[in-house]
Length: 172
Image (cartoon, rainbow, N blue to C red; front, top):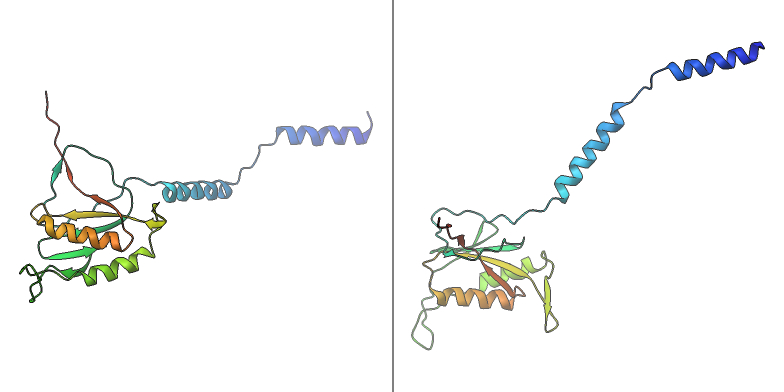
């Protein structure tokens, strides 16, 4: 054998017997990106805030809520995104029927601002409708809830859902 063939043969054998060096930096980067992607991409059920002293009604049907604007109605105030929007104090001037009404102007203003932040979930009669979840204490009169639903609907939050507690399963 010639000297050049012997050298070539030695180089091949050296390459074949050498161990591959693996850089962990690129693998760590890939796994970091994968974990970040999974954390950002994971979208579970919407979280319903828990308010102290708020007793939700009980229901036998349960559909998990989707992520949307949350309006909390307690006995004394209305909150949107954990901020107090207005208090539920009737005005001093009675209406035509002699009842004192609550002015929902501040609620309408905040809903109008929030409508810019939430994308429409459907179109009804050519108008974009957004979803709102109302968490109302079970002791709130329906007349007040009805007025709040009207204000929500007027501010393009026409898909209204109520948060409820799931009824406990009975063992048979």
